Structure formats: structure tokens, C-alpha cells
Amino acid sequence: MTHCKNHPDHKTETQCKLCLEPYCPSCTSHYFFVCEGCFYKILIVLLIVMIVLSYIACFGVF
Image 1: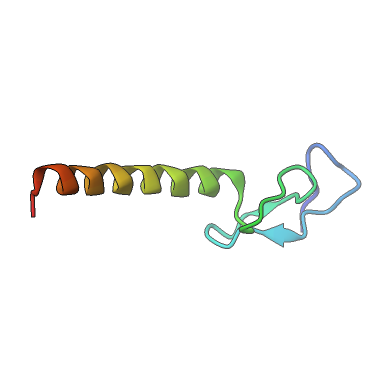
Image 2: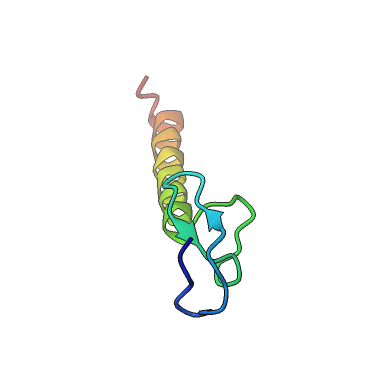
């Protein structure tokens, strides 16, 4: 395990469930056990899905 940049005395014991990169739970503690980068990627994908579904509902594309 590697050490955190902000907390040199702590080891990064937690791994992201998606990209398997170690992250420090003291710095970024998420409920979903994913790192901050993957969390924002999931939010962007959900936003795009919501936009596509709203166009389908409004204009009846399919």
C-alpha cells in the first residue's frame, strides 16, 4: 500500500471499486467506495442519460 500525500502517516488501505486505484478515506470518504474521479465520471454519465431520456420523452424519437 502507498501513503497519502496529505497524511504521510496513513496508508491508503481503500481501493476504488471501479478503477482499483488506492485512495485515502480520510481525504475523500465516499459512501459508494469509489474515488473522486470515478464519482464525477458516474455523475456525468447519469446527466447524459437524463438528457437523452428527456429528449426521447419530449420529442418521441423512438
